[in-house]
Length: 356
Ligand code: PMP
Image (cartoon, rainbow, N blue to C red):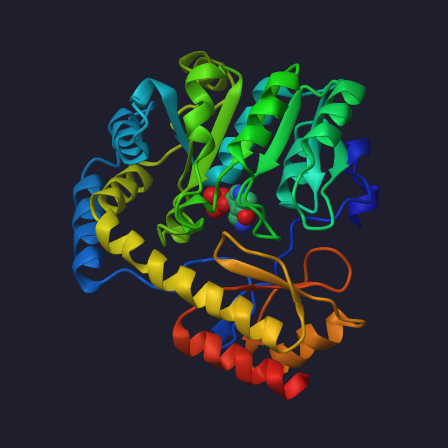
């Protein structure tokens, strides 16, 4: 039997799953993780928290993850409280819950591409029609064109990603505010990479008090160096959280996940302590690639989009042969490299030099 023989939903036929290759190579610069693992002291604290949690695994976890949400609210600042913060297994699950609550059959979601490939995949999974708007040549969003697209399509949801994946482009909150004012439904600003933004870049969190239909999503997978924990979260009006409670599965965040995430938040000085170094490495990577004559998108994230190659697959494969895995993503001819340690970036530069 093949997939086509199954009575699968018609709107899923012919689709391809999310597929960043997981290949075991010496230098992995393909999924925008933080290259630094936890210190021995943090590992010990995590193990202790898991040990304590393990003694209660016969019981369900705190269904509303209240203590964790309080910690997340304290981290975010901006006067936020637990009732304005929600958490799930990665920001992907947060986004899925948003689509389950505000999308659905007969509803639409608009995004501006190139952007995060999971937005349309999660929308489709929630039977929400995806409308692909366009970004400008510099990968920014023109607010007049965005407002025109919103007026034309009247989407139930608008997705904005800032800093954007895979381009690294941050949006001016004034642009976001114009879009929120024009949108008839919910506006989601995906800030998975916010902590990497250049100093002074304001968060869309600053817009929340005036915009009750705005949702800002974040994750502990990137700057927080906790991708394996699977912890994503959002900030929004308390009524939005009430809407999400209608679709979330009970006890979706395990006792161990909640415990590990709280320990990570308590150790945020260590975990976020690598961000400055990664930013500097990013800026140096942009400069180096430009000096090689390549076209490089300005980046406020922990990755860099560069090109433009006649045969990007050949460049991607050449790097892989040299033990460096990056990502074949973005507009035709472009490639994306995540920022690793200084040694990993040296390996990337040496490998790319061998190809150019
Ligand atoms: N949003 C963006 C823009 C991303 O790039 C990613 C991860 N690649 C996510 C959300 C999801 O991350 P997670 O589910 O690990 O929080």
